Length: 189
Image 1 (cartoon, rainbow, N blue to C red):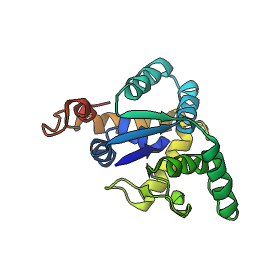
Image 2: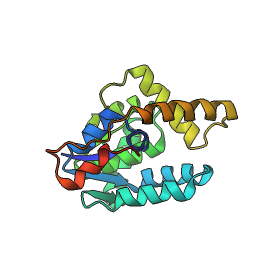
Image 3: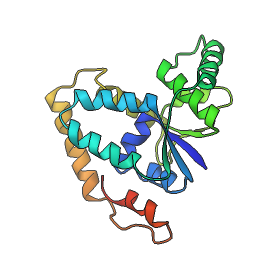
């Protein structure tokens, strides 16, 4: 199965979300939109770990089953059709571009964004183990990571503490039935 990772799904993968890891492991091909790359680079440049985050992203993109999808005329046409069909629905423009690329490529979109389900004809995969409320909270966290909202030092400290507790309990053993090129996704990010 070909799957396109949305920004929040990539961030969840990096944080060790078991549902996203399973989706990535079960995919024949991972597609990465240039729109998602732009959202990630925006967050990286606004954060304090630019070199580390860019290096990890480049490492991820270098894998043979990960492909970057560039914008085409077909995607632009689909964008126009989708945005016209969804005039009264509040879906961010970036997510419409991501949806149009996924539809052009015949890929499922892996995301925590419930509003993506409003796009007619788009196959959306919301990782298991996440309730709608948690998914909505992750959307808010995604905006904070991408500098949509200023963060207080206290909020950053709480998130770092939660992240370190989650990393401490994460398994580091790869599934032996996975092909060697996919086994590294189980290691802590």
